[in-house]
Length: 328
Image 1 (cartoon, rainbow, N blue to C red):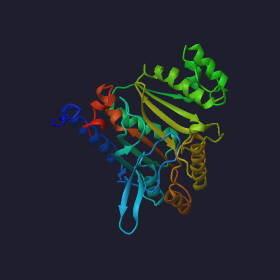
Image 2: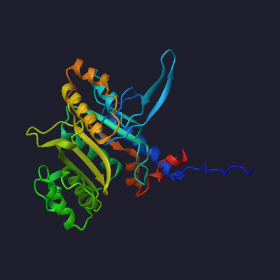
Image 3: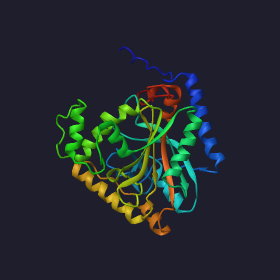
């Protein structure tokens, strides 16, 4: 019987790239240290998981003495435990570590990847975008920064006015006018049509630019962001680097009741889609209730591997990590 073939044990990224990766991590920590922002170390195994319908969590079974087998969930981000720390009064803080999301393995995403997430007390959406631009200015020096409101991009690139309220037919017409396939898409699914216009028409145009902040997302895509005073849009932004989605930030939702309502709505949507419900983070809800809500703050989650891709001009995430998911 012949022996099994040896796998390639070597790192997927060049050693010089791994040295630059270490420099990037050092630079990120230095940025926050200079601003008095504390690094925290949230757990990787939790009783709860993110119920957001757009996320697919991974879990493990843990054997606990006197308890037996217990399922614990790997984080899709460190958001929930950090918000518990904020409710406890910790103040400005950040986490830099690995997170896990199932269902996507490509040149832009791995099921395990590194995320930087930070929270700043008293900052609103404009101020947290300013800080994000300052951070990226240090990591990607010389890159041109632009800011555009979500609906303005639809008007500019797809000829769609009032993207927040437009019916499905308007988005479908834009797709057809751009020569994009519309076969098999539910004619009445307005949110899906709007997303298709974003990914198929607008995002390719953003690839022609450098750093683009897109702010003021639809309320249906608020996640845990607060809403504008008129309720028309979420106080949320995303940053694209050469068309690559790099970071996502909010002026944070604060009220405990609003968190519970959104968690409940997400699990209801999961049931409707035939997806498993996720265990709600009751510890986070208790923290919000006991402390009178999250302190006024804004937060950002940034993909570190993608930031290094942008920094080095790489188009494959597997070339900027020591060992890709398939080789781990």
